[in-house]
Image (cartoon, rainbow, N blue to C red; front, side, top):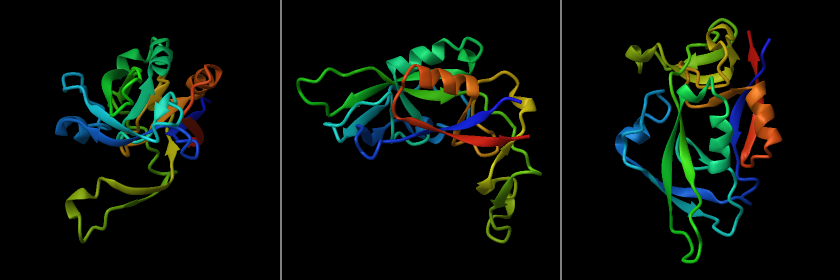
Length: 193
């Protein structure tokens, strides 16, 4: 059975540059994990912090989006079966030093979230019924996530529709990221049923 991993980003103990501020349209901010296309939105801006740090291939701080370098984008483009589920939204890096060239970074938008939350094997809590009676279909907190592999099919990158903020990847994509020595990310294996 295929293995899947939570794709998490990190600042390497604040040794990496990270995003201090993020300016984007409300639609872009509000829909960063919903799985819908956002290519028609105005290019967002990011203001950097720890500018003396290393610019990793994934930057922390742009809400629910993963901010990726040109190298990361190229790697994702090599996964031809998944390219239809990915959008690269150009990001303008602001407040750079006057002599510093702006490298290309993108917001990674994952399309078509997959309903693959294993309701029976996962451990989770819903919103309190007395306070949120109309939101009982939503998950408030996940203590233990188990993903049902069947709906994922051959996808290598996706979000779980029932709790869409995290990004998950296959073993194949994890191996490619590690082989390319891309920085700013870490992986946590998730249980699969």
